[in-house]
Length: 131
Image (cartoon, rainbow, N blue to C red; front, side, top):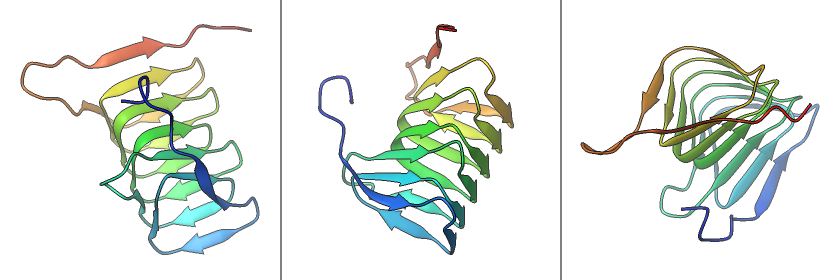
């Protein structure tokens, strides 16, 4: 999906030091540098990208097409197209994905659950160690 089309722009930011308690819905792209307690959900009818930075903490479900995590998530993750786990990613919860790229150092305390059709196989990629 994202290989052929340009990724949506990141239009929203939850800055470091910010705290949101409650559900948060967004369109296009969202970057979280602060803390969110509640469901973070992209508009399901449009392509979306969610970036959870090294300084971010999300406690609750997250839903988007393309998700990049380098912070902490306590809750289930639903990546409809692609999930990228950076080296400082920490997830406590089940991970639902179509394609998964995981860097060395990322930690998942939960089950990996591919979101597939009957005949499909999940796409897994171990990120190259560039350091």
